[in-house]
Length: 222
Image (cartoon, rainbow, N blue to C red; front, side, top):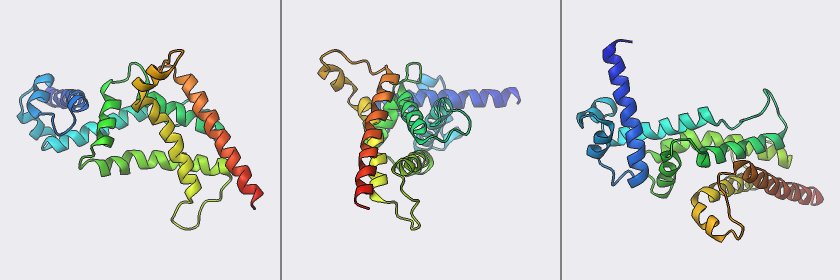
């Protein structure tokens, strides 16, 4: 790589990291290219050069955030190679999702940016669903299907119970992120949302209990 190429890549990376902070603090619509470039220490024309426009920069930031999070905390986090036990896979999935949202030392803007995008979707939202959220949800749905001992549907439409169980698991994890401050205030003995292992065990046990109950109910009606 030449010095010129190296400087160009460095500028691009500084823009992404600065933009991540600004977008997470202000949201896409309020954030300005001028402030982002000021934080990145570059001129405003650099955004057009590297990303085309503000929307292109925002899409690049979302992609960077997702790729970085998945590289550091993949959904099979801590599993042995080839491990197939669905309960262990569920526990690993829950832990990795909580780590991506709550772990100390991870870029502070990552979770806030995703929360902004979910609350106020932009044009990049559909791409985020297709490239980031849908593959993860499919991974979780397959685990739930195995736990329910539900056959893979021949038709395209997923069965409702599998879908609802998967979304409930994700919802529990998201709650500890989106309602973090409220939970801390309500907890009579104090609550440490950084205690990810404790949350992982609770959500996993709670979810497995519900899934086993529904599986037994289904068997009784069979």
